[in-house]
Amino acid sequence: MTVDLHHPELEALISMRMRTGRFSTVEDALIEALKTSRSIEEEAFAATKSGRTGAALVAAMQECPDRNIDIEPVRSPMPMREVRL
Image (cartoon, rainbow, N blue to C red; front, side, top):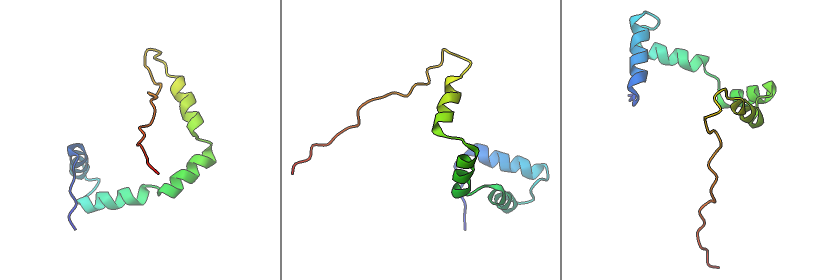
């Protein structure tokens, strides 16, 4: 199998970790990343168990210390196609 990296910063990060001796091969880095990452199901369960919700995210964003930042989403109508029945 061949893995193509499309982000140079990812390649640089892996190279740096290999130079420092944390990983001896790219495969070691991938194995460690996969072992320590949570699955989507685990993330969803952890979010609901901890009470993290969309409302909590909105509240946190509204408490932004810089009031000059506009964090409101742009609202526009969804495009509609004409349908003939």
